[in-house]
Length: 315
Image 1 (cartoon, rainbow, N blue to C red):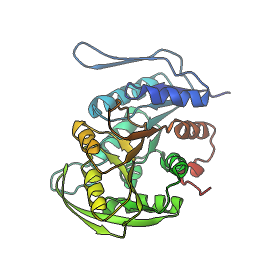
Image 2 (image 1 turned 45 degrees about the horizontal axis):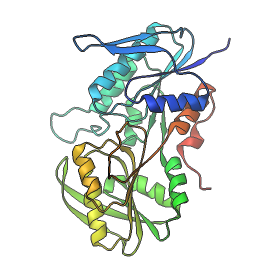
Image 3 (image 1 turned 180 degrees about the vertical axis):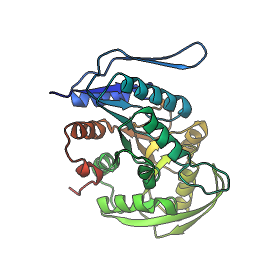
């Protein structure tokens, strides 16, 4: 029996889904995704998926709740249509920042979302650059966790930046920054921050020497760009030469766009895990992760190891 692979897309990031199926040299699965007049989501799978290996691509950024509900309904529709395996491909995992109980009487929403994905009928999850590694353990189904680092590495090497140092904008990002410093064979510095609120930074303390050096700030996601721009300001104050920011998921609301535009950041390097409009006058370079996700889908379908995509080996 030949098990076929089919890839379907939610409405959140159709260009990325199209690029992934082009990499796989297959057509995008046919489905109808829309809304009833009262705002309820409607989904219909417009082709046979019985006994087939199915992948649903949905990046869950703003409007997060709508995109998640759409994902749940698509998974349920595929399960009821007797797909043999359903993999939720989530380039950006919404609610990832709510991954722990750090105050009294608050939820662990990242875990709740994992439960809902499983309850909907997903049998596997493929995600990229989760905000916290422990989110993989929130699932009772297999999770393949990819990193955007290989794509970032190729671009950064092409820039031939000399005297480069990698900087983590907070203590929690040291592990990711350390990975980049190893890949690029550079030094490592850290900025320890104190917050006033979730969107405002009170102060930063510099650990390391950046004077006269090209600096690469590394983070997994940004929305208001408060941490990034405050870090860039602090680095410039300490004598950094050129400042680059490397962020896997740049959600960027209006406040974030204005902050980047008026900041010390020479270039923001990010990926297409989330869909963004073109921002005039904002130095953003968007790299595609379609090939990385497409190769992961190919390997999962053929029961091959995905391990080589987890950790990027130095060239």
